[in-house]
Amino acid sequence: MKKKLIAVIIGIMIVFVISILGFTYLKLIEPEWLLTIVNGILTTSLVIISALHMVEARRMRLESAKPIFSIQPADFYGESFLTLHILNSGGTAKDVRIDVSYKNHTEQFYNSSIGTGERVPILHLMKEPYFPNAGGVVAVQVKCKDSYGVEHLNKLTIDFDSLVKENRAVTNVLSPLDIIARHLKDIAWRLDDIEREIRHH
Image 1 (tube, rainbow, N blue to C red):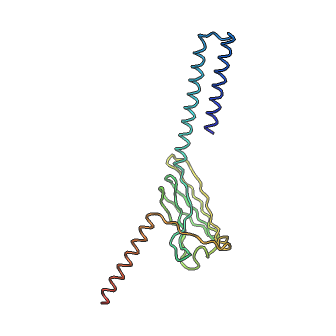
Image 2: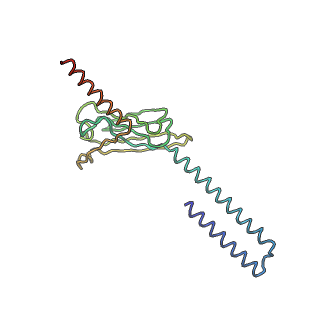
Image 3: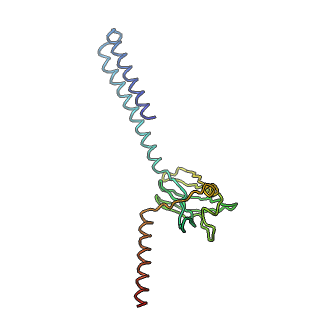
């Protein structure tokens, strides 16, 4: 959109300049007025382009501050998982209200803020069958404000019935911190094995 407007402005400038040069050639405009008119056209065009840049910069600032939520599985147990989180991959969300509906039951949560990269647990299964074999549809609605006070509404769903029907596996997405935590657990388990071997001998 921005590029199209700039192209239109440049086109108008060219038409004006050609017209003025034509009028001057036909002696419809006095030569001493030519430079004044051209300068006026150029100045007006630069003002318009600067205004477009300001509008675009403001739009980008607002866009970068917008919170972006997604549902993320966690606590994997083989090919199943026990927990659902919401992950904010956008700007900081403030005054966050979360509604979670699953199998005719709705729970409501509140967080004062959820920063970029932060996760919040919203649903946890205490017994088998775990997700996705538990089936059903999880519907999540997140109402929040960004750092500029602009309100946002995110609606998210996962249809586990369709995933089971399609025999579609759910993969685990690991962040760098998750990978570090897993390695630390492996080290802790290995140390426990060494300790048991020492005590056995």
